[in-house]
Image 1: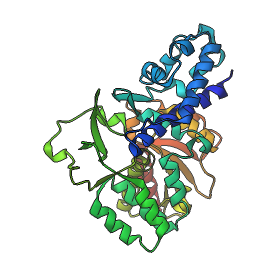
Image 2: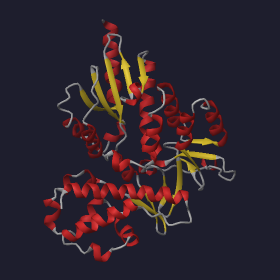
Image 3: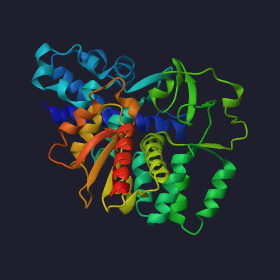
Image 4: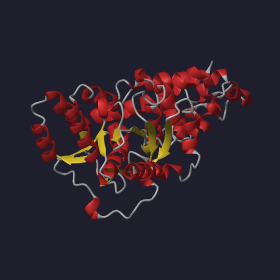
Length: 374
């Protein structure tokens, strides 16, 4: 038993939960069986038996396992392990250990993957990510021309919900490039459940057994009073939304990317979105010739972002003066050491650092002013 075994265990459970949700959407009347989830559950039960826990006896099947574990913070999954087992495997140092529940109960035995589940899965290797909506879309759009890539990606970011007429119009505009049209159409799914337009992110907010839910728990932190104007009329069957993983993986960090681009535009700087087929998210060119490359990230858990950066080998190399991982400024309100955690693993890349959006804007403004003074 080792930490690699446990990492794979939680990766499979996270992937399996998302697979189950996708299968249930495709075939609502059929039980959504996920081999990945069952594999992950079996691995966790085997590890628990090794650690002296009776979990394999008490929760031997998927239904009982989900009912007991899946809505609990990950740290609590190890409550019945012998005291030395967690320390022996150094599990407290693993990214998954710090996550909140991987799912919440919607109704009966239906569980909806949480934003923590999606965020954790995004840090995993491509072999685990294979088959997820976000990975499939990425593989579709990465084959497009730079122009079509930017066009489809920007549309997705700016339109979390569209009408049937919007879908037809965009499909016609992409008619000359079947691959671009296919990527665009794949990104969306029909809205079939009663829901409201989320006032935080613009996606769908639905009511479940334990209250309202969106693609991110952040959206439900402060709920406004819902009005009739916010309710989506699905009676005609002509409304579509981004698939959950695509909203989480593309649209959420994409809003940060567009805000950076808009700030550069305001400063009359040269900028480009997703240069070199998304090697970077935003490229900024200053009057003195310096180039800054930006990679926008929307991981609320700094340990998750640290893991992702380490798995990717740090910031992409290139001919730039400065490289920045940028996070939303509000992420540091309750985690003031967020950027410090990331910057510790960037110490070997002297011209790269992690900053908040507010700090980046300040740096851009200072650099732009210095160029004008020369």
